[in-house]
Picture (cartoon, rainbow, N blue to C red):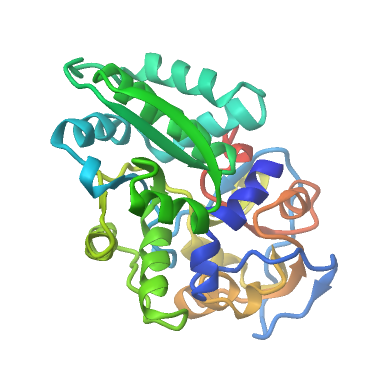
Length: 334
């Protein structure tokens, strides 16, 4: 979907630039190529199906890209942070998937989807309407960011602030606005933002500071934010990061639920891995699967980064396993 391809460029682009994620450049030509690493054994042939499921990253290949509020430090009063933390407390990955489904599949507006979520999950419970002042919540140019921004508006409005949401664009545009106080709040992703600030301060070849451990990532994020006048609220349990999906029919047939299962049962000639053209060389894509899990696919299908080509290849039985994003609306029905 268009919203998800925007996410690949917007929310995850900084990590890709730092060489941490698969990268989200132009989709490569379709077709199947031999991977760099040889595979022995039979492997697991693709199994078509309408439902996609994410395999658990049990050895923590990916870094922690949990959703959390980024706040201009001068605006980060305890009351404002507490209101935003109410959203974080109610949000996890399955709920984020459902929010994305409401907007990207059911075609509800971010405002409607956010209000329905807030009402159903008691986001404003316990918030006292005793604050005042104007707050601008910025949003990236993709639907997930816009919906979370609307959730922040609901919680801040309940606290008494006069709030507007402004869609600004990519991180290169809204992060300076946040530093300057032109916007006061924006939804962010822990590992991506940590690396964005890291490379902005120390150059594109800076040693990575994010980690598969959320506490370490947030610690590095807050340290980087302190230097530029940005504070952060509590991270939610909702993550939007690289993940590897198979069809439910594939998972049932081969009895795989984790990436360790996939490596142990499906390394071999019949297994087709699908992803963006740069996946074989990326440490958070095929190269990482080999290094961390000793997973060796029989062939690689060069498609897109978590987009419609990869998901269609899985559903039609052209690929065994493919790179997706963990909050993709296509996973909602799994």
